[in-house]
Length: 465
Ligand SMILES: Nc1nc2c(ncn2[C@@H]2O[C@H](COP(=O)(O)OP(=O)(O)OP(=O)(O)O)[C@@H](O)[C@H]2O)c(=O)[nH]1
Ligand SMILES: [Mg+2]
Picture 1 (cartoon, rainbow, N blue to C red):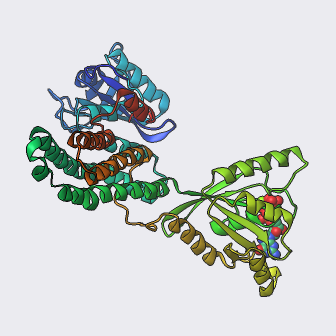
Picture 2 (tube, rainbow, N blue to C red):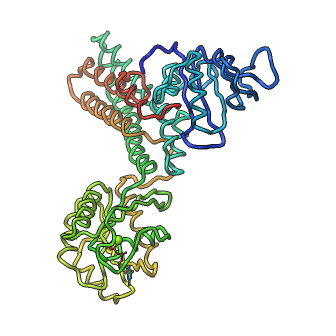
Picture 3 (spheres, rainbow, N blue to C red):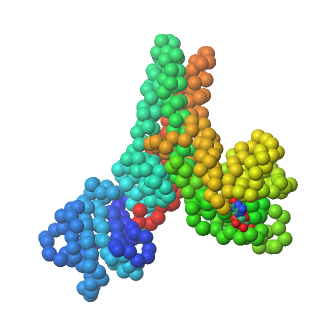
């Protein structure tokens, strides 16, 4: 992927499989020449105009055989996705046909693009920064409307602008420190530690904290929260999944051990994406298949972010219920008392007394009762874990890589803060911490990002993007 940018790259930009159209994308200095070689417009023109779509045919240059009727466009540099010469050929969406056209493009001088290489060029040519390039990936893979909205805002530079603001403040701070280093005898007047501290504590550190919290929110908006439904066999886990989905998704039978594999489905509560995972009823199984399902349920629980422990409210709690409670105790947890249609309110109170300290939500999955209360409780459980509460109006959402860099920047700022509060002041050390914070912020937008990191980031893209 680290070839010179002077090469011309080509790829199929649409997914495999039949479709209305399939697009071949070519970028690089040879792109217009390649188009001229393969494409003959319906109405011959001396030269294709930039950014205009032409109807015509793709032909084999050697035999003149027509491969497809297409729309083609040449977009002249620099007003293109990559800032290079770009050509797109809109064929019919047949993968064999697209591959043939791609081979012709290669024979005419292009080489196959690597994953994300078009976007990487947009980054290397300075059209977008690294956080925007990553937003392209988020945009392609978003699974919720919230994730989509966040990706678009990040693509438009929402995160870049915040990073620029914080970096700006740090640069001002560094400038002051540098003057103080150059004029040691005037150091106290120049430095004015209270003023620098104020910038740090009211401007820089809160902004970093805000972005870190936005990253936590963003993860939820993008990926949703995994909620494992666990419980003894036959307590109604699959019935609860179906009830929350309002769809008969999982098989429900009166037999214990019905669910043997995990089933995952998504729902949204107040815009918060929840991935509900139905598991095999957990007990010491003897059937080897059921046993595997049980192991998987335990794994699911360990990977889930929250647990819904389902118990049968119409029967007394068992040692297995309590063992499951133990197993899930290290996560945010709700106890859901199912089959309330079979019991009296007093029995719920007994259950609550025995599970003192646990939030118990009575429901009937079969009759659809208590579901709204359960959804509210799940929402509160998750939103409460976010510190500042769930903020659906999130405007930027740093990803895990950004979050790590933001955390390192914040740590450097904390050390800077401590340094400014200690005497005697050591402007050289303070300047180093300031630079450390700036470098970590630079990593986010790609100013200082090493090549291996770039390869890793763009390697996640599909080919053709
Ligand atoms: N009365 C009543 N019966 C219910 C309720 N929820 C589930 N059941 C019944 O309980 C039985 C077991 O339900 P499932 O949803 O298959 O239970 P499960 O926990 O998924 O069971 P396994 O997959 O075997 O672990 C079925 O006969 C359901 O109809 C409820 O709220 N009230
Ligand atoms: Mg089940």
